[in-house]
Image (cartoon, rainbow, N blue to C red; front, side, top):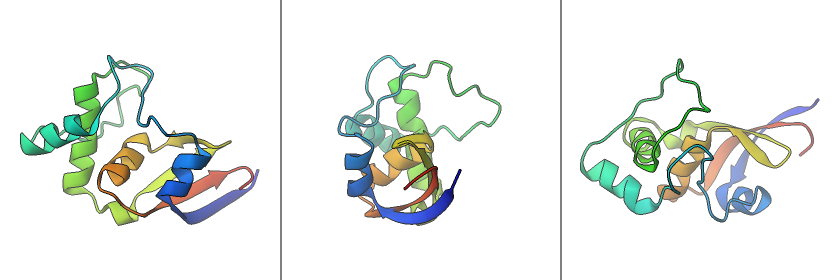
Length: 115
């Protein structure tokens, strides 16, 4: 398996990974929308990452927005990295959502497999 680390245009990744209705998590009540993130930032509702939490457990759309808001508020988004395999984001969905919301142009990607 090849591993490549690249800085990629976010718009290119949106098209390549089919993220036109992004972000949409499977274990949530509804799709998160930008107004959810805006509300979380406005009300200081932040949810820091928790490495002990099972990522497959249910989270409300507002909790996802709070996680994205935490990233926007406390992390240098120019330095974040996501992981992609077979044109799917397998790690970094909240980071990608934070970059999209913040209108970043590029993101660092670890590509597992072919690029």
